[in-house]
Image 1 (spheres, rainbow, N blue to C red):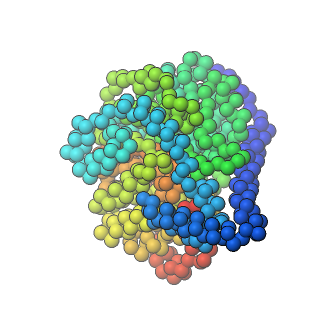
Image 2 (cartoon, rainbow, N blue to C red):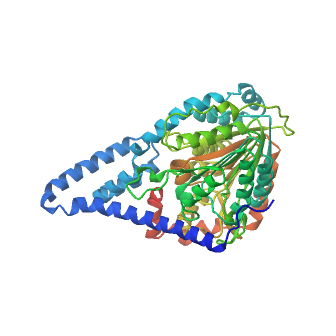
Length: 523
């Protein structure tokens, strides 16, 4: 079939330029908002005494309120220090990006949507009991995930692991061509260029065939790749398209919380997730940071239902219009499938508005339950005190704890903060590897050949505390051996930097790095 749309290089450059202009404009608007806050107080010099008293009282009240919150001290202390040191600036920034009040309307929409959707999930108590008979440690983590998020564990599901994003994309394209009823795509970033063009052609064809095709992307994640005309183009092709939390050039209290999920669901039969977005660099079409390392999984079988519900949750809760009235039974109807694999898998969602840090708790639980080894792969390493303690204690127990980070950074400031954590980890026995071919963007963990996770959750504050994320907990499955083999290959391609950070200059961080690390939660 001939392509529906011939893209000219100029059109792509223009789209990207417009996206970059929006990003620059967004940054300027934030600066203007902060300046206005400051001018509001500093220019009213005739009321300086009273303003100073009011500001001091407000700052102390805010600090006490922050201190009393049920949050890790790692998240509270930067705000407390900033507010006490610079009351006006600190309060202004907190009102702009740190205030939980800003998520109340979103929290209400999620509650309304989940009241309709979550009853479609089954508890699967029998499968959980079977997992307990095989691996009690994994069953404990699965119990926590189900209790905290309502997403159950499944057995009748085949899992395919991809050690590179291109392999995942090629399989995804084949499945998209065979879609009969619906296609759901939810991604943090979409780049309207070569990789997306291959997807778009299939989506348009399926839409013409009567398939319900929906695309959902995060505005901030895609702002440097596409402009607002992308939605119009999708709609013209018969593809329903929505933007999560669009940035507006005004005070945007919900700015800090983004949709970082990467999900494809087809006919409630097949689902994909992993670290890669739908942009050229993820598939090594372009190489802005050397070679790109990413991973993903394909699910076929009963567990796909959870990803269908995750997408529908964001599709409806991410908009500002009432309770969903659509009949979801058509999307969630059951069908007969017999899996070829044994084992268990449990897709789960995490969000910043329910105060339950599922992504972090799953990681910490795996570290604590590891007896022989525990491996992690992450592009960013910005840890809370609780996770630092879990890593260090596991290593001191004799567990082989290893973390792979990139050899070439995509964000130099964040890379310096990542490296600032190395010394505190390696002195307790944690081993650190940097993947020398380029940028390692995969987000996964593995423990004792028994349990693993693959998904979108980084080891940093953004993923663990501020973003909407997804992951898949895998236990006693043959795919775990493939994940372990990929870790072993990646270790060989990486340079171990453990000894570089045990002593010497690594023990004394420069003031700039200390400052960035302290306020990393705000970056």
